[in-house]
Amino acid sequence: MIDYFEDLHVGQRFRAGPIVVTRERIISFAEEFDPQPMHLSEALSVGTLAGELIASGWHTASVTMRLLIDGACPRLQGKGIGAGVESLSWPNAVRPEDSLSAESEILDLRRSKSNPMRGIMRLKTTTTRQDGAVVQLVTASMIVPCRTAG
Image (tube, rainbow, N blue to C red):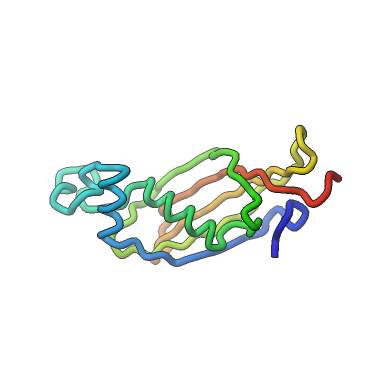
């Protein structure tokens, strides 16, 4: 089990999934958080750039967050906290019944200069659908507890 900064190393990878994104969940998420035509119904999506019902990028980000909690991120026993997103992109659409998985890789680890009991981890997470197409890329930083101040 990974509990602390000292248990991590650059290049370490973590995977989770799949999670199926249903039509009903795409629409439900969109109705509450991103009510754009291409996310609300097949009929409303006609004439949009998407031309079909697709999940909101923010829905994809939320599914990815769940995958991170499910194991696509080091298990820090709830001790880590997000520090920011460096980049986020959605290169391909998520459609009803797509099955999403995520893989994260530790890009960088460093001790905090202001608090020696904290480390900072940069993590790149790639979310893919069942055909291997990348649907989300995110690089983010997390604050991670250290076992010792050394």
